[in-house]
Image (cartoon, rainbow, N blue to C red):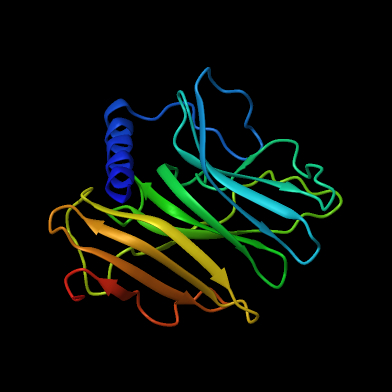
Length: 223
């Protein structure tokens, strides 16, 4: 199952790179976009006010694979009229986004992580990224895409000079503690070497990584 998931992500990325990107859409512009809409990889979290935020992966004909979210009040009524984009900032559109997870901090922000690849990013491989979505209020409608922060999916000293789409992170998970420190862990698979490991990064409440990305477990080092 894990290998199938990796192969699916790789094939989807190659398809996007091959056919190009058209009709990029942004926050609060999601309407029935095509005859083929694929929604997958849902994740959900509640805040201290019992509001619910759901995030998921979306792929529609003529649109990039993106991450969407939608918020509901404690009665289950939608706060947002439509799903809004979490990925794809205007200045640096990410063309390939998948596998979101979500947690909530002490300020009721939704903290969302996922896997992302950008043409304009300095990174040459798929990255783990995260962002914060502000809590809803009585008049809130999300009409801007939140700032997205990238985390290298590899060790700090594992620098690569060339684009390598054989290295694929997937299944990121996120947790936030009472001090608003963020922990993100994920699986990382290297098709070239066959290396498969679990990686971890801890980020403080100011958005600074407390330590470099760590290998929690790795097939080359485990018995």
